[in-house]
Image 1: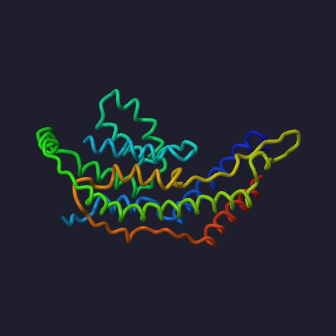
Image 2: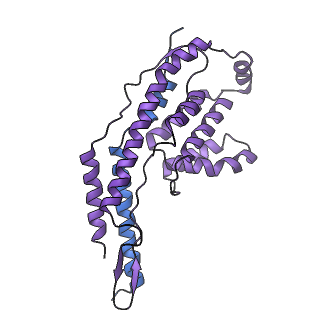
Image 3: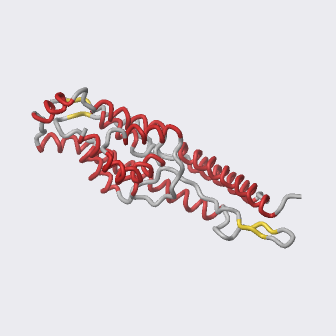
Length: 48
Length: 210
């Protein structure tokens, strides 16, 4: 039979996996943020 | 190289603004950290490492690649080239800088508004759907433990749109002439239903632990 400590370790491992998955999902579902703007600023076309 | 470092410091300031828990670096982030540190002297490395680690931990792979590409692009092939470039810097007129700013400022403000709305929406959804810290525990025969509180990390908006405009405008925006920028890649919306479902699914699974 598993001890309370072992069950706690297993439960927290599952919790952290869920948090990691959710973080990845949120990162992909959220707005693009500043990254495309920074890219555009670095690749501007000089007009003068 | 000084421009590169100033951009990195600016990016670190932006990244340090939101309060996020420290995260372990992924392999591409660790690799970028080492490449950046390799460009610095020993004294600067000590100072810059914690900020860079914090900044890189919040950047996605595409953002890290973009930052490294900018570093490579700006790095001089040899010291003589650097001296030559620095000896004859081009400067834009105030009208040129206004022309550039009129393009990037609205784009940055729109992006900040969207990111801030996303942050608020996610924070509220997690608070509503997941157990609060210390609320969720598992009990057995003579023992009890708390499961780690449900948290998520993503690239949050900085403290203000003004901060983005000031920092990015003085670091990433070109200062040597008049430019046109293509901001069509900016995506400032998000699917609230999809976000809510992702949080709902994660919180439901979280409640089943134990």
